[in-house]
Image (cartoon, rainbow, N blue to C red; front, top):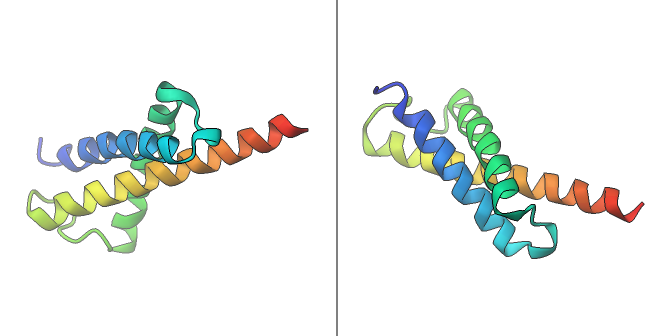
Length: 95
């Protein structure tokens, strides 16, 4: 279970980050479900990217640094991916 905890935290914080970005960028929002899905995907990618770069200290462990790194990576990754998808969707709708 210890190896799955950082991934679960990244997915949940990614969904939260996606919905937070959707709330801030109302015109780019994908709806609650769309924001959550984009956030979950971005959370997994953002957390994995930070771990590969060595930014998320604790190497996915159960210590506080690892948990905070998972939350930060997941939340930021989820928000960024949701915003990117929202901007692409908006640009395609204008054509």
